[in-house]
Length: 166
Image 1 (cartoon, rainbow, N blue to C red):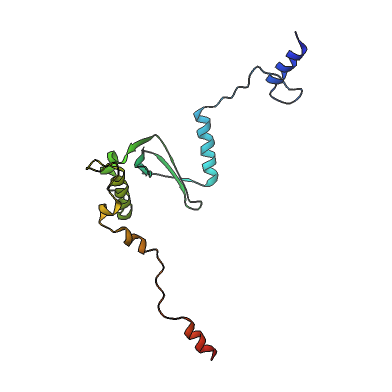
Image 2: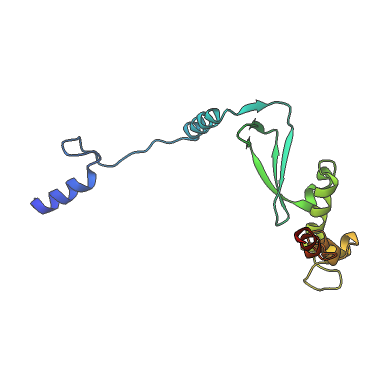
């Protein structure tokens, strides 16, 4: 045998430092159970507690899809503002879930979800663009922007300060 070839093989199979036992290959035994145990210990460190009685969880994404958990395990920690939802998840279109989502959404979330839904659907006239958000609810786009604008200044604020000086 060639000495250089033996040293090269020796360097490839050594796992530990100098003087440790050599193995042919490094085996990593990982199962989902060990990953789940690690996850649960990490969640316990955050102080999460189980929340019983939750039958389903729906997370609405921006692209019109819904991540649906049926009978999930929900844990929460209000102090660290952390929620953990574990279980079997399904990704569905919002149109499939719309009847069940109607009862879960409040007015503000419902209107934004409806706008996104209509914007993502094609226009009946054959245009690829969806209907404008303002056409859905009947709100002008200008009115939505007015809420964040700074109001116009009225009067001259320098006059009272000049009056104090004199």
